[in-house]
Length: 170
Image: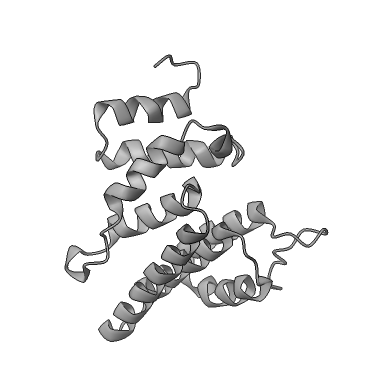
């Protein structure tokens, strides 16, 4: 099966397709390496593209057997995610990718030091016009995940619930 082309006809990254293919790679580790190569081939400055490369590097680590290789790819993924966030520190989706990954990393790796910082930015950005430009489905996925973690206080939960149901008054 041919690899998806992750560019729109105008040359910009096709973020909707990239999101779909990333979800496929989460479920099928055999897709990870080719997707990393394809995304690196875009040579895109978009922070989401870089963050998804970082998330894919985490998936690569997940599927490896040798502990030192797992550690190498886990650290590499965190470096890649940090570079993505440095491009746009308020980008909710890049923060969410790092948050969800760091939440699942074993504590003994000491690679989960941004959880509180990322959660704060996500909560601050979840109901802004910028986050709404991501589309309702993406915002819903982020808000739903954040609520299910059980790591949010009451005020944070209200902000997330408002993102799920904009008619809720705060």
